[in-house]
Image 1 (cartoon, helix red, strand yellow):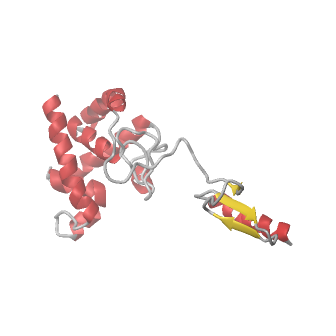
Image 2 (cartoon, rainbow, N blue to C red; image 1 turned 90 degrees about the vertical axis):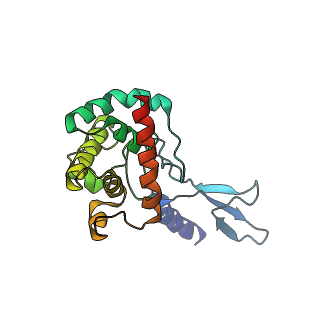
Image 3 (spheres, rainbow, N blue to C red; image 1 turned 180 degrees about the vertical axis):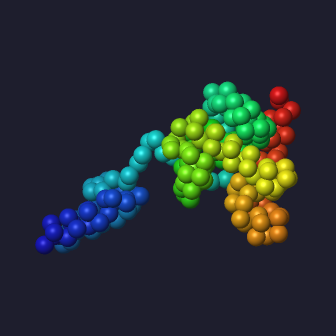
Length: 199
């Protein structure tokens, strides 16, 4: 019976485990399960899924990789030229979104350097959001369309990139009152100004 229960538990947890599962048997012979290791005798029975190729950007301040910035600058400049978008704006968005980590995945499912949501990637023909070139070109094209939609109003463009163009329109063509978006807009515009001065 114990083996059957353990097997059911393992199959139930294994596909979506986000934490290690430990087990120990107490003095009475009762088997206990926990997601925390209480003592060194606990044995791990289910290991958390860890995909080294996909990492979520840290909450709050995203650390910008200067090596990554240098590495992807040629792609950024080419995408900026093709889609008529300011290269400093592309760098600012990438810095704020992923810190130049092409394997970044947010808890909302945004992927890659420019943190494209799956529907946005599909909309712009991005088949692999982890591919830096596809991701940057897709994000640049999206920004280009937002610039046209909001008549080059950078505050609204950046707000729409974060919250979606429908949200900006729904709030009367203004920055949606979302805490994340209200912090995101000035951050990106400040980064853009910084990168412009460095050009």
